[in-house]
Length: 324
Length: 245
Ligand SMILES: Cc1cc2nc3c(=O)[nH]c(=O)nc-3n(C[C@H](O)[C@H](O)[C@H](O)COP(=O)(O)OP(=O)(O)OC[C@H]3O[C@@H](n4cnc5c(N)ncnc54)[C@H](O)[C@@H]3O)c2cc1C
Image (cartoon, rainbow over all chains, first blue to last red; front, side, top):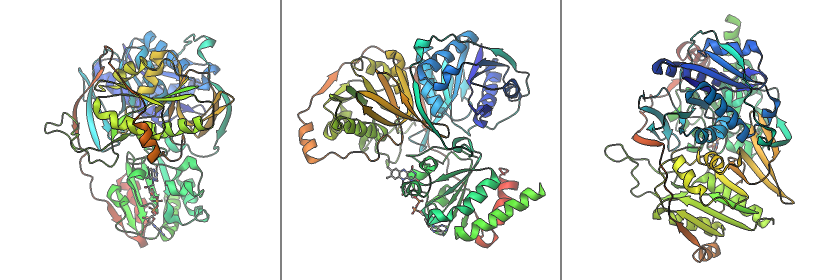
C-alpha cells in the first residue's frame, strides 16, 4: 500500500508546492503505516527527482513521454490511475490548482474513490478518513469523511509546514502505456510571460492597487520584488485599467495565491480581493487610510504613504542582503 | 451545436454563513439563492456564442430540490432555451455528476464552472466527463466557435494556450470566460415563464463523502503596526519574528 503524490514541475524543477505535498504525504503515511510514491510526468533530471527523497518520497515513478505535454486531461487521468493501481495506492494527492483540479475528479471516478478538494492540513483522523477544508469561499471550515477505501484529495497550498524526512528515493522509469487515441487535445499556440517568478508558486508576493496611482509608479515595487525574488500581483482595477498585465490580477475573479508573505501596497482589501489572498501565511498592508479593511486581514501594517514607505523597504532589504 | 450549462444553486456570496445549533448543517434560513457565479459566466458565454450563430440550443441543468427552481427560471430568463431539474438533494460531487450523466449525453459542449461558491468542490465537471467517457479541459478562460470548430483558451502556469479538442467535450471554465454576467431583461423574465423546466427523477446513486460538521474560523489576531517613518522595522519583523524573509 502507498500514498501516491502527483508532482508538478516548472521548467524541470519541482514546484515548492510539490515538496509541501510530499512532506504532507509522508506525515499521513506515518499515521497509516504506509509509504510515499511520487509520480513525475515530464522532463525532470534524476538529480532533481532524488530531491523528493529529502521530503519523504520512498519511490519516484518517472514518466518520460512527450505526449503528456498537451496536458490532455483524459490521458493524464489514465496515467495517474495506472500508477495508483500499480502501487496499490489508497490515498492519491494532487495540488489544489489548475492541474490538480483538472485531473483529480477524473481519477476519483476511475478508482471508485471519494474525493475532497482543497484539504487544509493533516486528516482529522485516518480511520475513518476525515479531512478538513474551507467552505463558503473561506468563511467556514467543514470536516468531511471519505467513505470509500481509496481516497482522492487535492491539497490547499500553504496548509502544511514543509518538513524534511530524508529518505533514499528509488527512481523507477514507468510507462503507463496510454494509446495515441487517448490524446485528443492539440495545442495550437502557447503564450508565456517569461523570465518572471511564477506567481502561483512564489513564496513572496509584492502587489499594488489603485493607491499606486498609475503604471509609471511601479518601478519601486518592481525593484523591491526583484530584490526579494518575489512574484508580482495587483488588484482587479489595476489590471482592468491596463496598468499591469491581467496575469497579475489576484482575487475572487483572478488568481488565487497562498505565498508565505503577501505585501499589499495601496490596496483597500475588498472582500473579492481578499478571496484570492487570504490563505497567505502573512499579509502585510501599506495603506494611508487607517480604516481600510485590508488591516483587518493583515498581520503587519503601516498606515502611511506607499511612496514614502517603498524606498525605505528597498533600503532595508539591501542592508539585510548585505549582512547575510 | 447543442450546449448544456451546469447550474449550481448557491447562497448569495454576501450571505453571512451560519450553521445549525449542533454545527452539523448549513442554516439556510433567510438565504437568498443565486446562480453560482462561475456558472452564470458560463451561461453568459454560451449566450454570446449562440448570438454569433452556430449554436442551436442551450439547456441548463441542476440537481436540486424544488427550492432551486427560481434559480433555474433566472437562467431561462438570461436566455437558456430549456431547463432540467433532477429532483434530489445534491449530496456530494460524485452523486451530482452521476445524476447529471443521465441527461448530459446528447450535447456537444458541456460547460461547468470551476467550483461552486458554497462547498468549493471543483469536482463535478471532471467527474461527469469521466462518467460519460469524454474529454474535459479545465482552467478554460475563453471559448470561440469558428466554422463549427471550438477554439479553447486555457490558463497554464505562467501563461495561456489556445487548444483544439474534438467534441463532445466538457469545458470547466474560470475567470476570463465572460466579462460580466448577463442580467435578465424584463422581456426575458416574461418569456422564461413559458419555457420548459423539466423535472427528472434521480437515479440510484450513493454519495462517497459525508459532511460531518462545520466550524467558523477563529478570530484573527490584531494587525501589528509599524510607523510610517520607521518602515525598515517591517523588514526586521518579517525576518526575525515571522521568519519569512
Ligand atoms: C463580482 C466582483 C468580483 C471582483 N473580483 C475582484 C478580484 O478578483 N480582485 C480584486 O482585486 N478586486 C475584485 N473586485 C473589485 C473589488 O471589489 C475592489 O473594487 C478592488 O479590489 C479595489 O481595488 P484597490 O484596492 O486596488 O482599489 P481601491 O479600493 O480604490 O483602494 C485603493 C487604496 O489605496 C489606498 N491609497 C491611496 N493612495 C495611497 C498611497 N499613496 N499610499 C498608500 N495607500 C494609498 C487607499 O486608501 C485605498 O484603500 C471584484 C468586484 C466584484 C463586484
